[in-house]
Length: 204
Ligand SMILES: NC(=O)c1ccc[n+]([C@@H]2O[C@H](COP(=O)([O-])OP(=O)(O)OC[C@H]3O[C@@H](n4cnc5c(N)ncnc54)[C@H](OP(=O)(O)O)[C@@H]3O)[C@@H](O)[C@H]2O)c1
Image (cartoon, rainbow, N blue to C red; front, side, top):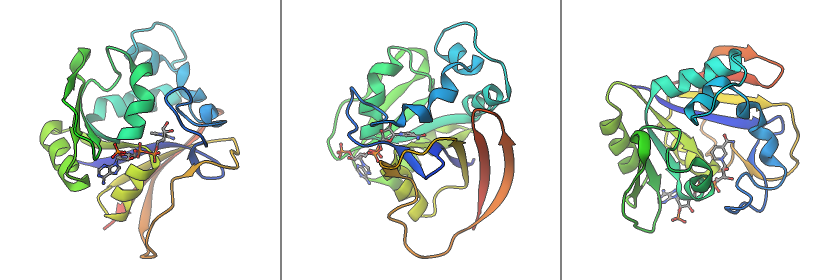
């Protein structure tokens, strides 16, 4: 079982823009972070759409879908994604949503459930691991959520999809980390015209 985090990031280090709301889910200017995904065959297939490009980027997306057995996300990511994901969200797996405000579990079509966890990151990860079987647990975002798991040393593999854009402002991924050095071993670099996909494993 591997705990992964997989984030689209601008060249200047942002994973979201400013003024994030459900109507502006990525934040100002940050839609560019996700444009590489929209026309991938694997992504479209997961959204019950046909067509799209069957390229290397699409293979990486398919790899994530096939490897991931449970997902942990923050309540802001949930709130900003909920409408877009619709009745049959792309996860098709249990999703544990971190929040301080309890809510009933939501059961969607296709195997996705959203369970709201109010007792912190360790509990959410334990619940996700129990639900994932032999597959990976992915810490899906947003920035605050991934930062906390990074700080706690609970992520095994980090994949960054570096998008060739500069946002200038927004939420940075690598913030609120203590100064303790962390060493990462490069696993893979895949460069395409859409993004540079960097995969690292934390040396523990
Ligand atoms: N670039 C990418 O690949 C990527 C991926 C995912 C998301 N995003 C973007 O990231 C943005 C959201 O990131 P964000 O940093 O603002 O928020 P977030 O991490 O998605 O969610 C933060 C919220 O999660 C809850 N939470 C976090 N830690 C908690 C803890 N330890 N215990 C209990 N609850 C906890 C709190 O919810 P309550 O307020 O309910 O207590 C908190 O307000 C969105 O714009 C989204 O589109 C980008």
